[in-house]
Length: 308
Image (cartoon, rainbow, N blue to C red; front, top):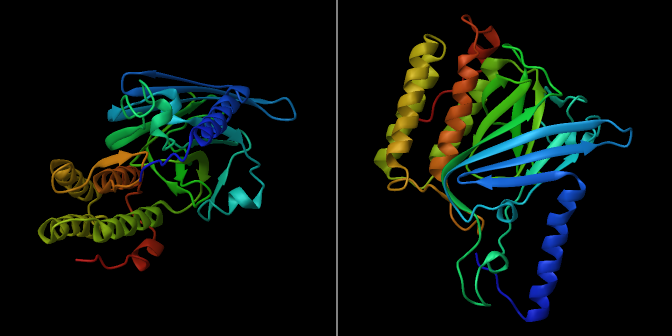
């Protein structure tokens, strides 16, 4: 996908609209800084009742190109946890806590010429690109961390359904981390679902991703074999299942950029299969690590057969 300009007036109009959108984040008290491959956003939002909600968002990229506050385009807003619109986008059994009703949107614009250096038609392309996936951390003092916390980092396309992408929770007061191959919206939700069913759902999602990815037949079969091993062992030996999942991640990483597409660009004209598969495998790993020694019967009854 490329940007086509039809005239200088159109270009100035686009520039005005985009910079008005970027400026609006300042009114919402969102400050973004970039240092090397890391972007940090300091967010402070106040609701109509005078309550202020603070957060720090850190995004670490793999080999980013043209990373800047403008090319990242990170904004934030407060949402109503009781609103059916936002609630309908969350998985059943999850909800947004009134203690931290913040939604963060990262939507890098495909307006390369606006960020280019030099004269019109020259300079370097300024849209954001990166390899594989990014790590995102949402840090807030509004939520308390516990070792058995049910808070999860959720991600959705703009206006779409949220999915759990959590790869780690840490203290301070709450640091929710995840990985992603693309953007757009993030929330921290309270997840009351049965962990083993969540794990099985993530296995099915990863299975679907392997089947739809652009891969050689041999590599696809090998990845399906490893995922099938994870699924078979999860009910017998979680440690062995985790080892098989690590083998899966290693296999994807070993082929990323050669046999598996691994680039994301704000043009959104290429797929990032490697980033998607590793991101989904990492959040599956997080869930598997939290499984109880004896899984509930409902999980045994709802364990589907693997594709291979």
